Amino acid sequence: MSNPALLTVGATLLTCVLATIGLHIFSSGRAERAALENRLALTAATETGRSRYFRGVDRRLRKTTFGKKLQLRLSATGLDVTPGEFFVYVVVGAAGLWLIATSVLAPFFGPIAAVVAIWSSVTFLNWQRQKRIEAFINQLPDLSRILANATAAGLALRTALGMAAEELEAPAGEELATVANQLAVGRSIDEALGELADRLPSRELVVLVTTLVLSNKAGGTVVGSLRNLTETLEERKETRREVRTMLSEVNATAYTVPLMGLGAMIMLNSMTPGSMEKMTGHPIGQIVVAVSVALYALGFVAMRRIGKIDV
Image (cartoon, rainbow, N blue to C red; front, side, top):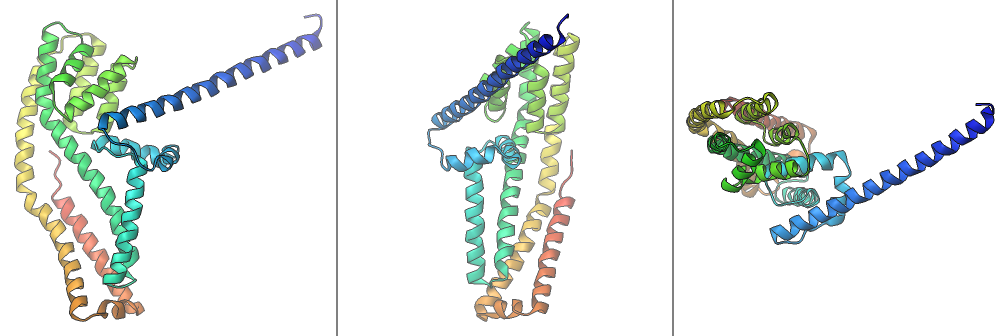
């Protein structure tokens, strides 16, 4: 402490050394993470038995926020496609529909067709995700029953989840296998089950996850709760099936009406070639078509809202 200048120089040198070591560790960690992601991607491609396309686009897309969100949405659908592949397919499909609408109807309908193609791709992902959620919900009674029996036999919750992953078919088996793998590498049950609930959001799954997490934290018996939950899930399963059957006509109508409008335009243009191009060549005609498309879209959204009832 008698020489402040020497102490300052020594502290500065020590700070520089620690900063260099920290930077080196950070760089090494990023490199190891990138190598691990590449190995996991290669392993996934090997397991699915096919090579991945557009790897350069996929690598660049995964680094963006949009790519990360797209990857999360694709993982929830269960589709064997990478974000890069899906992005390229959507862009090519939108461009193809743009050209088709321009040649069949009029150039005015090209951008509309491209927007419809992009919206259809998002709708397809939502439908595929909802389909997987429905299939997972239908398996929840069996999952709850397996967990209750395994817990009653004295097995730990981690072991019970791994056993359920082996016995159940997809999608529950695949999702629980992911949870089991996360638990094997050191993640907590709360985090693994919470991520599962985020991938496949549903009231039934949230109730099951909450029951498992609370029982794991409190350390109490979970057998009785799971058995009661199994009966409740069975009843909700039947109720959801009845409601879906009653609303099937409304959902079919929501898609039929816009298709009838598209068919009418194609028929009119085929009966009088060039009529769509002449109509959209004037500002008034463009406004009329834009208003018509907006009304069809509004009717579609309204009918979908009417046919959507959360049970």
